[in-house]
Length: 100
Image 1: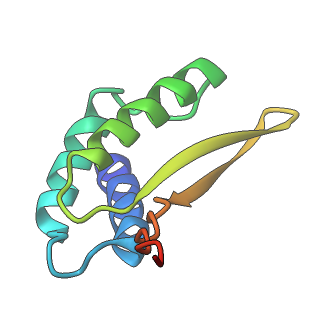
Image 2: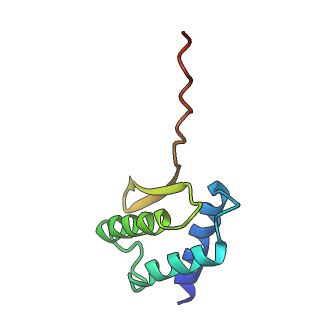
């Protein structure tokens, strides 16, 4: 369980950097992400398929956390190496009223 908790905390800490601090609740986010990672029984990144499924599950979990403003993407580097890319949500610009 220690590896799951460490991985969950890594995701939470990174998400917290991009979150709305007034809404984002770190203990709640940890619980959600820890539960999501536990579903993979420690097989987080053993194969490309497991990584894809994990990233999808983490993104669903992240989207359910109030105040979160980030998602992740797994980038295959080749030779079995990979990297996680953190993608902050794009914030829409307010529409300016047209001048008459």
